[in-house]
Image 1 (cartoon, rainbow, N blue to C red):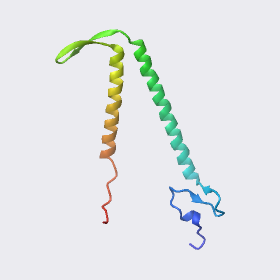
Image 2: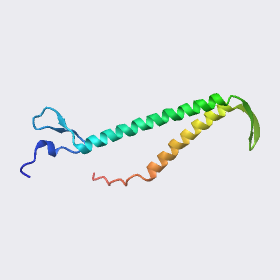
Image 3: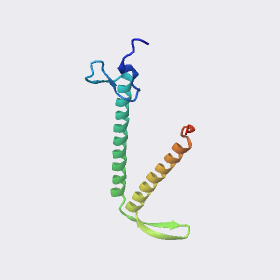
Length: 114
């Protein structure tokens, strides 16, 4: 490869330096990945805000008290607290289950050479 330049020798995750040395060169694929990631992050943020608005609306609409019956007893609580507690508990269980799935499906580690 006698015609290779310093720009083509850089790893794909690092910005390449233009032959004139002024600005980094971004490939179409790298730009597409960057904008797609930005779009996914924005969509995730919008969905999170929409979900938070729904939870707040549920809390505001359910301000009455109800009687709760447990396995070993019963009690009384505001529906607003029940909605908030169930939302937080569901969020925490989602984080834990996503972590377990990610951990169990991760790529195998390469053996160290040292």
